[in-house]
Length: 454
Image (cartoon, rainbow, N blue to C red; front, side, top):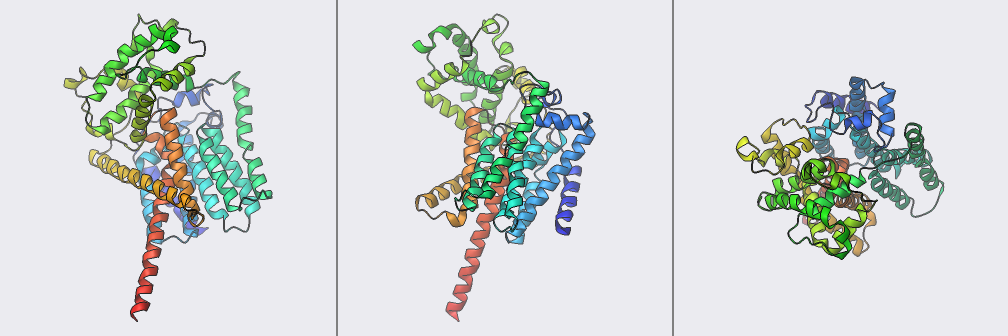
């Protein structure tokens, strides 16, 4: 307990006094403050508890993130991992100012991060615990909280719940049942809160679909076939503007700029489509009649390679924090060559650039993490194929979870480092567990060599 309190105080102090990449109010903040129907209601409910006093919310967010990270470090210590590696984990997560900056802005992310961190911590403690019955209930509560905070949290919660089942050796016992039932508590509360303040749910899914339709219409080989004929006029309008963007992007050689801009332009299409197309566009009066998803499906069916290219670009953008800020020249001399520059600037949001050398170091670090994660994925598949995965259950399950989550985000939404951060602790855990395993093997071989020589 003293160790846990020490880490909590230390981490709180570091985060509190650390610089922030974000302003207090981001583009998405007001939709949470106003409890809009496109948002899940758990975070707006928490904002209401604090009577919308932003300073108090931020203090609590920093506290919550600190507690969750302290618990995560404590659970790693209990796994008897090399203490130096735990220290490295501490440095890499607490001094990732991009990650900790989410505690200093009005966004749901920090609660999402904390719920994930606490769930992972409890699962790491669960295997050797004598109080599995109580822990299974608490784990279920936090897995449900993940789902109630963000829709894509369902992927993480299902993976972590499956891990509980594997730990219990596939037996349907009271611990699994209790965890499963507890998982519904917070989502049901969120549903109650939502419909207390809203008549019906809306979603940003339609915006996401619209953004993808626009971007795909700009590919050089895009064609309007018979299935899309009734939407020909609108798709031609989309294609005319989107092609200009696509030609601009294809001329960019730097992948750090190109991949980030693919995502940024898709966001422009999601929320500023009327400004993109102009006043004379037929879009403002166009009735899709709920067929956006059908149009996108037909476009993917006809040219799947375009959708895959776009999604791969988003995937790489997830791993490129600061790439655009470092390399993109948007000086006044170049602005005239950048399509829809003002709309692009508006959609990008505000980010405080602390230090360009620091950003470059972070970019290089995340490139290493990306290659490590992809290598670990191949390693995990080889272990699964040969049926020798049980001894490395945590590494393999976390590795697959990371990639399933990131690929899902890339195909469904866009690529931004903001969407990588929820699984950032998983990546670091896989890294230190792999290094710990390597060090143990090396030490074991060293002892064998010593005894063979003597």
